[in-house]
Length: 117
Image (cartoon, rainbow, N blue to C red; front, side, top):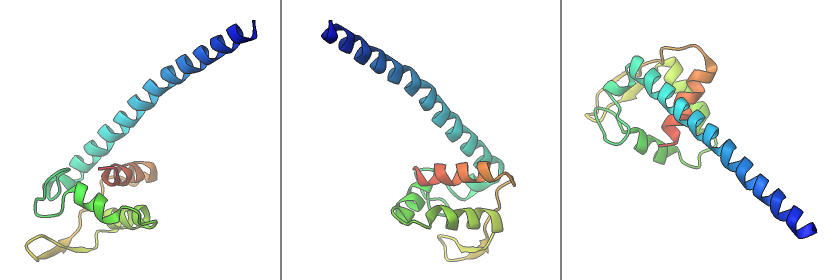
């Protein structure tokens, strides 16, 4: 009897975990879509691409550069909200574009998306 109850509980737990995993995956995809949409709206994709360099480094290269850096999110939030001078691939400098949002959660979402590449 105990073995039967244990198997049923394990089965319920596995099914429950499976059901909750799908909404989480959908939520992550929705965040990525929202981040990409805000990046496009803000003009980020004029200079950056996810996987290839344009006039600025790809988001993949940016993520690799900041990997393991505890200050990565804070520093990138600062860059995308204050528009400091940045060097382009050709050596020229220009003001970095500022995200077209003042919502802290949207800004953090874009930065997290970039760092996840």
